[in-house]
Amino acid sequence: MNPVIGQCPICGNNLHVTRLNCRNCDTTIDGHFTLGRLYQLTAEQLDFVEVFLRCEGKINRVEQEIGLSYPAVRARLVDVIRALGYEVGESPTAQRVVPEETRRDILNELQNGNLTAEEALQLLRGEGE
Image (cartoon, rainbow, N blue to C red):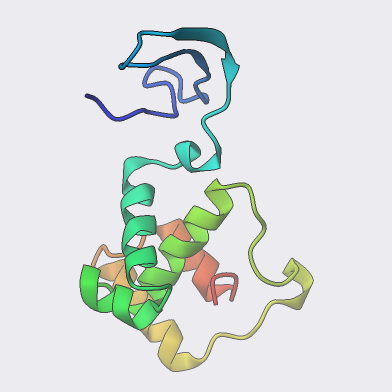
């Protein structure tokens, strides 16, 4: 069996389930069903969520398992949280100052290709901490 996808491969909009079928008795139910928030995530985001849960939400363990730095793991976590439709952290007017060492780590991760420019910018603004 193929895994269920939640986004249209053509336009990227969310897909809706319209038919359910029991493989045992062959009962079929037609209607409009939601896939839930997790199906809004990309395959990469879902993989990250699995690792995050397996590591019991401990970022240091996630770092070790996927071989990324703290800022890169945090950026991926923020990306997943936002993809699920939630706000992250403090309000934009209450942004924190990022320590110099952390700023250097973020820039190194960007240079090494472990962070996108958007992820790095969010972390540098203090939005991902």
